[in-house]
Structure formats: C-alpha cells, structure tokens
Length: 367
Ligand SMILES: Cc1ncc(COP(=O)(O)O)c(C=O)c1O
Image (cartoon, rainbow, N blue to C red; front, side):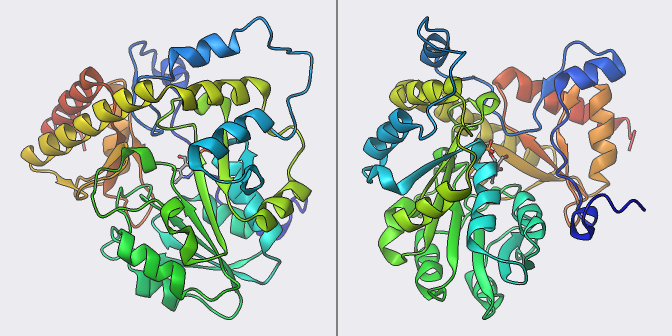
C-alpha cells in the first residue's frame, strides 16, 4: 500500500455524506427526487438571507472579515455572552476538528457516544488520540455513568451530541448537569447542539443554561439545520476566552466567507421564520413517527431532532437502495444500526412520498 498518507489516516473510514439529488438523477435518470438524507431544513432560510447576500455592497473581491466581528457581535447579543467567548467555524464540523487539535495531543484520550456523529471519531483519530466510543444503552439512550466510567487520567475531551445524531435521543437537564459537574477539571466537555432548535422535551436544557456547572465547556451550534443555511457553512462555538484564544491560534484566518457571515446575521434576526420552520418540522416529526408506527415499524422514541430513526428489522441498506429507485434518498446506518434507516423530516408532501415508497418497497418484498 502507498505510504503517502500517514498510517492513522489510512485506517480512517471517510464520513459518508447523504447522496446528493443530482447524483441520483445522473445515476438512475430520476428527475423528481426527494432527499431526506442530510437533516437539512426543507423550508430553506429566511428570504432576508437571500436579500442580504445579493446586496449590492457585498464585496466579492475582498477577503471576508477574519474575525467575523458583526456576526459574533450579533451572537453575543443573542446569547448574552461577551464577544470574546465566541468563535466562528466553517460549519460546526470545522470546530470539532479544531477543538481536538488545540486541546489534545497524541496519546491523550477522548470519549464520545456510539452511535453518534462520526466526526468526533474522525477528528480524534486525525489527532492521534486514543478514544472510547461508549455504547448507548440499546444503541439509543445516553447513560451518564457509562460516559463517566470511560474517562481515564488521559482523557482531555468528551463529546456529546445533544440531541444525538442519529438516534434523536437526549440527555435531560439533571443528568447533563450531573455529568458536567462530575467530569475531572482537565476534561473539556463539548456539547454539540446542532439540533437544539427542534427539541420539545420539557426536561431538556441547552448547555448555555448550565455554563456555571463547569469551566471547561464548549457549546457548538450551527446555521446548517434550523436556520436553513447548510450550503454556506457557518457554525460557532461558545466557550471560555481561553478556549477561543487557543482556537484562534490555529483557525484559518478566513474560514467563514462573507456570504455566510452576512446571511447568518440575517437568519438570526428573523426569529419568526425560524419559529415557523421549526414548528412545521416538529409537527411533521410527530406525524411521521406515528405513521411509521401505525405501519408496524419500530421508531426510536421521541426524536428531538429533525429526523427519525426507523428500525426495519431487515438490512437497512437494501431498503435504502430500493428507495433510491423510487427517487427517495434516506440514510442507511452503519453497525450497530444496520437494520435501521435515518429519515430527515421533510415537507408534508415529501414525507408522504417517502411513506408511500417505503410501503411499496416493503410490500413488494424487494428486500
Ligand atoms: C451532531 C452534528 N454536529 C455537527 C454537524 C455538522 O454541521 P455543520 O458542519 O453543517 O455545522 C452535524 C451535521 O449533520 C451533526 O449532525
């Protein structure tokens, strides 16, 4: 084998993104495609974002503001935190990677859940960290004692996706607070709240409300989901000035483009648009889960995100492939969820199309 890439990189499995619509059109000649694979917002961003980025003053020949000052200022107001506690990322994905690189060195240790967002593992491996992927109970539920039990004297990082991708499950306020208080001081707890806006469970608490529970806490948010700006790649982290200063040492100076900065500000200001989209998605999430259960399928309980995880009790990848032939893209799951698919909650007509296609695929026993 070529020795071009370092051995720990050769051992990595690349992140498998949702299949783009154009790819399916190219491969199968299907024009009318429904994509429910990447937890995107089907309603798109506020129209004010489009106005903002098409504004005559957008200077495309200039580099973006390297500090993203205006957006950070707006976020500081939104969260009522000092601007020194905010750093922007090229999507929150970049920040996951940066956080690993600035806080932990080769041979130190990271803890995250399994199944959870694969990028915690990828970023840890890239930094040559040892890691423990803590199995969720029944592959679905967080257990704080299991997470704490995985912490070693070398642990520097703990990642939690709350709510969790791909299960939709969450750690409730009391348990999250217990975890944050119980972790050894040296550990940076990273609470990734990519799906925070879709939560309707009353016992959920955003980590922004628990900042006094521990000093070493980083909270990740993104404009890719509820704000509908996935194409522009804007995420941010809220953390101590010490963490933000460290991130700024390594962060590429122009990591978030001007269009992203400007659109994110417009998105943040249009609360009504955000609320309408989130309400529609939460309503549809309940309807979709109910319809799947009525069809006798097993849905992970009470997803708090903009997707549902369905256990089909047969190979999920085969169902995924049969659905592609129906023009519907969902997400097959790796082990231990290989009998499940993850379905992003779309618009009502998209969800109905998915349900009809799934029913046809299962009835025709194509799998
Ligand atoms: C849990 C979680 N965190 C982070 C991300 C990355 O989002 P982005 O880089 O678009 O901000 C995703 C994307 O699917 C996610 O599911």
